[in-house]
Length: 393
Ligand code: 3PZ
Ligand code: ZN
Image (cartoon, rainbow, N blue to C red):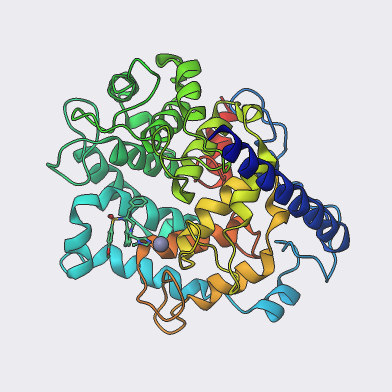
């Protein structure tokens, strides 16, 4: 038994080396290093302690054969890879926001606060956040708060960590964190930490590394990380890393792309990424790219636009984004657009929704598609919002 696991580890390490060599070669040939703030913030330093990179710094090299895109050279990039229908997507998001009683809204009723975060963050990345009535949104968000301090998915719904982070993120987008009773919200979140360092999602107690991320991200934004035991939280997250390099929702659970984002994001925010084997994790992540250029969430599964975010954000945080073909991924995401009515779907020719529109646009932002605001891979908020939270205080 011992032997077989050693053998499989050896095989994996062997493959990993091949992959690393291939990637290094690929990098030499085509890809200049990138120095944008979104990409460099997490190289081993806790951002809330000392952000190293000045916003607006541009890549020093740029060539027509480069795999990486640049916000500075839109014309050639768009000509080569197709066009993001920015105006159509803005219209689509605004129309979903207004349609409160159709089928999508009925399905989404219980997670409306998540939906608001997806839609509003998309608008902000597209430069159109001012198209919504800020006071109306802020007032509605605050009506979703429960007396416990947590937020429900809609007015009158039970509080849960999932909606509490969305509430905080939406308020951060509008620079309205100050309307919160920070003591109350952060006590709600901190109260959900368990003795082993893990977090439950609500009072009913389901444990999942998703909730570790939500707690750490929320408390970091509120400057209240000292309310929890960060060391134990990190130790718990590390105990969820598997031999294949990926992370699961509890110790021993199968590696999954979404869970990787939560674990890697939480480690990035707490300045703990030096604890992970980045080559091994990077190997699992870059194996997610399939022929069409899209990324899947687990081996043998179909690609899906939302994995562009879960996987790509991790690769950027661990500095391995050059291990996948960026240009093919851009093309896959652009192929998932509804070019007539706006919106992005999970894969080409499926029905669009707000969730995949957000993750598609956010993925393109991570890939530095021209004309989009940069998004932070750990906080999943525009870099300028994150800078406002951490640099100015
Ligand atoms: C979708 N939810 O459980 S859900 C979600 N999925 O609430 C929202 N990729 O059918 C929308 N799949 C669409 N608008 C899908 C959010 C899921 C993720 C499903 C999905 C996405 C492939 C199958 C879980 C953050 C929060 C929640 C999730 C993930 C991350 C659905 C199906 C499920 C859900 C909602 C609607 C329309 C939209
Ligand atoms: Zn999806």
